[in-house]
Amino acid sequence: MNQQSKPAKNVPAFSLARQVKNMRPQFTAALEKVLDSQSFIGGGYIETIEKQLAQYMRVKHVISCNSGTDALTMALRVLEMPENAIVLTTPFSFIASSSEIVALGAHPVFIDIEPDTYNIDPQILEAWLQREALVKDGKTFHRTTGFPVVGMLPVDIFGQCANYDALHAIAKKWNLWIVEDCAQALGAQFNGKMAGTLGTIGTISFYPTKNLGAFGDAGCCVTDDDVLAEKLLTLRNHGRKRNYEYESLGVNSRLDAFQAAILSEKLPHLDRWNEQRRHVAQWYEEGLGHIPYIKLPRTKVGTHVYHQYSVIVEPLQGAPMRSKLEQHLAQCGIQTRLFYPQSLPDIAFLRTHQQLVTTCPVADFTVRNILSLPMWPELERDEVAYVIENIREFFQMQASAYNREKSCNTAAL
Image (cartoon, rainbow, N blue to C red; front, side):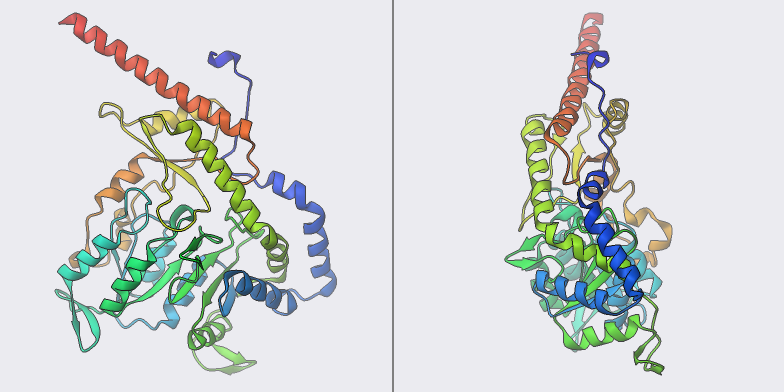
């Protein structure tokens, strides 16, 4: 079938249109109840979603806030990092996982990722500590600078948890805490525990594109630690436990009732939506698994909730193919995304100290070749088939062009 005879389709990388259409009556009723209550900040709607999330995640404390970025900032603040603290984190993520470390006067040290999961690589992390750190009086320090090494901030990228068995073993050995960035993996599990509950503190984003998304910015911290929970509650409310009784320097980071009401409507559907995402991923795997130039995502630990379905577009005979495939799919009405277009160590202001600069070749290769295909729960099988068909067609055309060029070169000899 040539390009001109194909039925026209438009497949966005992500869309809420079908979800909103299906649930508009529930959303409208929930928002109208908030309007009628005139309780827009704090109150029952906030308490309800915090309790619902705590029950869903099987965790003691959920402390809602304004965004996933605020959740990261709050988590790092209540852990009270000393001056020039070092936090080990991933080079392959949205910037907030490292920018908030820098914003608090600490240093992110970037540890390369696993090539099959894109999550932080525990073996490389352990090797860095063995080479660069030492333990003295129960605390860990960087050998060269003397800076304290206090914790790690893994990101459960694209919907799959990092390897927390390995990370916890390292954390225990080196006296480190773990802040788990679970912005993309809510609903995933690792060894029977819910994503977001696998660190000292977990942080979650409810940005509208997330698997559980609000209709604006929203986030939360989760923890089983009573002391940290109390600190988080005080911090998010201007540093006060009660009205005008200020105990410390705080922030104003609150989830509003409209977002809480929407999240309460959506939460009961999250597991079903995540299962639908797994079906979409299975369709992709069935259709693309035999193409030699595409490396598909791998479920290595726990369960995957496929916030994104990101593939590596392998170079063909040394020539990059990602941009060409992206352009081909765009011409067919298929939208793709680049998560992420650059490795975080390439951002100058995140390189805070020359002695702490690391190399991350796997992350560097990944950002040059990764491509995220359409992924959302309401995608239909014929739409996924259309994406697969056009990817196959692209590589058939590339292979034919290469063979023609090879034949011409052979004939010229």
